Structures are given as structure tokens and as C-alpha cells.
Length: 115
Image (cartoon, rainbow, N blue to C red; front, top):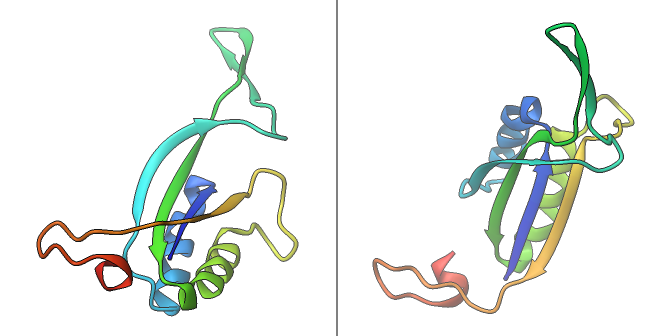
């Protein structure tokens, strides 16, 4: 079992969800987050003054999958989250973490069956 955490551009969310459905990954958690990396924020004008916004809005997906779904899930996120053919700075990141256990609260099932 793995926990896949992906941070993507908000405007790519619907494309990523569609790509995930194509590979039969239909359970995910979505959170609005803020952060910055190579983009280093952006400059905006507010009331005639230029300000730097250090934190950019992003969307974080958390997806728990069994081993056989790891690569299809990563491929779907890349397909839906990439801007254009080659991508752009700020398209996001994917983190894959080991997951020791999963418990379905309703039934008490544990492990891969609970996902």
C-alpha cells in the first residue's frame, strides 16, 4: 500500500480527476494549500503599489492505493497535471510514501481490502 500525495495547479484539477477515473482510481482527498518553489511567488499591483505574493495557491491530492495502482496513478496525475506537451515550472510534484496500514471505520477491515 502507498500514499500518493500530489501538489498541482488548481486549474488542472478537473483534468487530473478525469485521468484518474480513466485508470479506475476514484477515491481521493483534495485540499486547498499554499506554497512556493521555483516560481518564487508572483508580483501583483494593489492600489497602485507593487507587492510580492510569496505563497501561491495549489491543490493537494491524497490518494491511498494498492501496489498495482501506484504507477497508473502516477501516470494519470502527470498526464492531467502537466501544462502542454513538456510542462512548465509550477506544474507540481508527486510524493509516494509507504503506508503501514489502512482501516475502514465502518467495517473494521484492515490493509489492502480497506482501501
